[in-house]
Length: 282
Image (tube, rainbow, N blue to C red; front, side, top):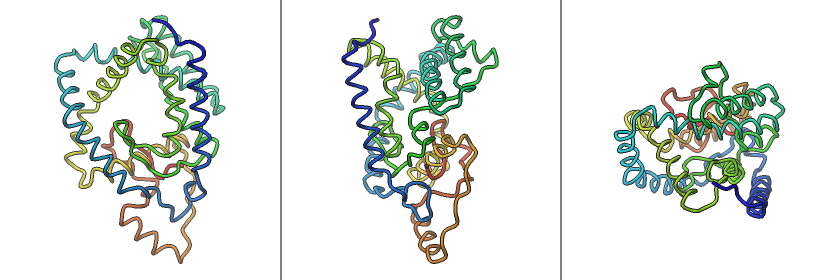
């Protein structure tokens, strides 16, 4: 197990910096939460990608995740999740510090230290038993904290729901994922596949609920994702949304009925999956 060489890491950081610059260019005032904004201007294309992802999930991911659940004991699956969560806690600590949330950042650092030293490199979650809670923060939330608007809603192949801002932050987030710390394509691919399968296995119950209750699964997931992401950026303390001008009210109502506007900030679906989202993203 060998860490990446410096030139490779620098090249990844360069790509990440370009991506962050692009999100600043593509985020417009209308995407900052103003009245009448269209958060899903690419809905036709997004629905095609969404349907592709659904087909891949039904043909590959769901069957593999189901088999994985049936074969691998639950304690082992939980240990795998703990291992990946330990890396997420380390990245969360950095993002909390960048956002000026030093108390949460130090708690994350303590979590990583406790789980790495006493939890067999994160396989055991001893930090939670010590009363240290997760404070998951990613680079998309950090950008949002500093006023970068979410931009348009976008569905990414395989990765699923996102926004222009969050999609641009993915290369930076990937630098803190386990595969980035190892050389060798086979090791990196193996860790990535394991993370995807383990995560999908943990969502089997949630997706069954959505399949049962959602009349339009695409709209349900989109609105839930946007709601949750906005809530995460503001740590649940959502600002007041200015009322739409009178001459825009009818237009806004029509857009909302057509599914082109995010719903009011309240109403996060109780049955939304763990990583589904928050109202109009910032």
